[in-house]
Length: 199
Image (cartoon, rainbow, N blue to C red; front, side, top):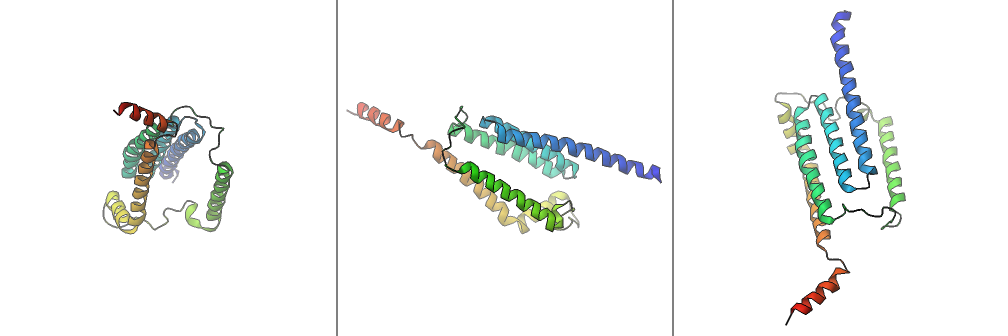
């Protein structure tokens, strides 16, 4: 009997080590995202976090999601973030002590405390956030993981999927519009140059 249980215990120990290592990578990347003063460094820390999440997907036997996590998020989305950061020009050193919106930091702390309280409340009163295998039921039936994921995304979760894509497009368009807006100090200079060039 102990000989039969030893592979299970070994697999559990390996899973625990992988989870601890991936969690350490994710937490260090997340701390780097919120603590870095340079937005480019924050985006690179986000890549570290996304790679840690991909490792957790592999540990859960979801190889397709791990590949999508690396290719789409760590690749395309973070490159898009870096493009927008460079386009807006916030990669230069800025004074982080200046607060352009009054009260935004206390509001952020209040929203963070509210989110933490909601998470603790869910963990207290709902069993599905405390480690149950699935919130919507087990993925059973014929077909591969990719087929089951596609069926869920394009049937049951189609609206949230499309709303997320629309929000990403709106964010990028808004960033480009804000970046193309001429500054107030540059506008009179451009006007003088146009007047000097005109006959």
